[in-house]
Image 1 (cartoon, rainbow, N blue to C red):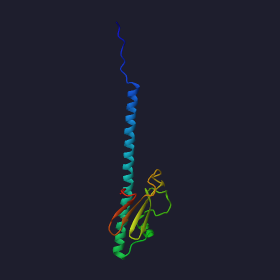
Image 2 (image 1 turned 135 degrees about the vertical axis):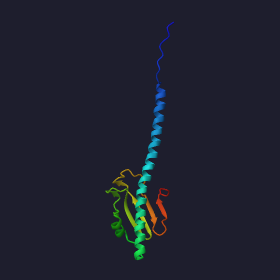
Image 3 (image 1 turned 60 degrees about the vertical axis):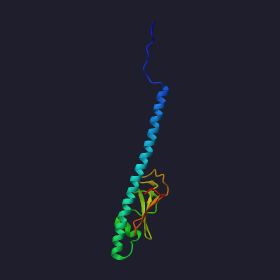
Image 4 (image 1 turned 120 degrees about the horizontal axis):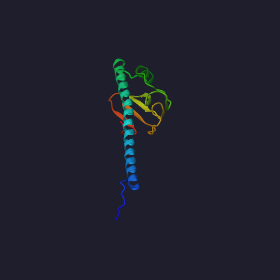
Length: 140
């Protein structure tokens, strides 16, 4: 009796299972990648806020008052425009001084971040104590 030759190949079901597993892993990897990218963008704002705080504290030591937004923007070369679209090369489009706080507002479109899904997002730094806050909470 002649035995038929057996083919070594994957079945369709095995291929579909492998494709599903690879797809799930790729999706998880992409989500983690976006999270890391967002942390990097937040680091830019945090770094700039630290620089602004140093400038404010030096100014306060010298003159006994804090700089307003316009003065601070000129000294630090940071954007202060009120437009919600970023046309510059920064992830944060606006730095504002209100009372004892410096705010950094996040770009929502244009610039480097056309796909920001965070919506209204900002960082706040207390010039006196260095206390930090972010909206939504936990981003900083």
